[in-house]
Image (tube, rainbow, N blue to C red; front, side):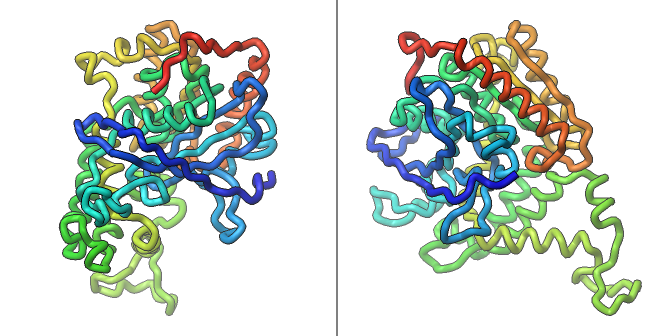
Length: 391
């Protein structure tokens, strides 16, 4: 299906301080966002799409001056697509701390007149949700038809259902988890250490030195990318194929590139280091580590989800070993125990964690059916303005 076409990012500044979970605060900040489709008269058809680690507010469409820069979930969002912009008003927001326009480490700290760098405060999933709720207030959206996200975006959707239970009617959590495992935290820390130990990092103030810790970013991306793919997917794409322009099957017997998988990972690392910010990578992976809504309930996820009111759609992928189906089932079980309405799909797909971004027909059709149900129920659902929370 065709893309939604040319879109334009928007910026909204907030002068009111944002108090963060860490105890720090941002005196003022800007959020970048994009919208697709039209908001209906009673503003009941709005859907918030939350982004994952290296994505942004650019969910769908293209930019007039960058026609090749297609939104990261363009296959999901657009006219006639599973999240149909002929029906729904879709919002993508760039999270605080990012490097794609919202206030982050690259921006000037008003207290010093210099870029924040490593002084930018650590932010959490919950901090992002509060900022998103403030944006919704400014747009006049009292209640979302749905909040949706994959991976880290799914964590945000889950946090929305807990923090603002009356501000969303549906919660769509894809390839996500209620908290990271020790193994996941370990992978994130290895990636962070690659950046922190790069001589060009300069304690986070590399902007002033006119350099970028590219080597650290390359390794961080390579480590992360390995975890996004399944063993089967890598075996099918690369196997033990050698990369040799001369066509020889001989090893080179050095520490350069012998195998196709090495070439692929280095390409991904090089590309990532050209557009992503090192401080942002540190911040976002730490937000992933800290997310654990059950922590405040002595580890009891059922209690953490007790006040939710949304209907839930939860999906996982069989070969996703980063955020495995077992983690999604934990969410489903806790919701069932709370007698929430929840649909769960465990999709047999070979692509690992990245499957949530790809065009698996079963997955796309299930999401399409879920939004079809939401659309069919729009006329029967009334927004209760008297009891809805505000940030």
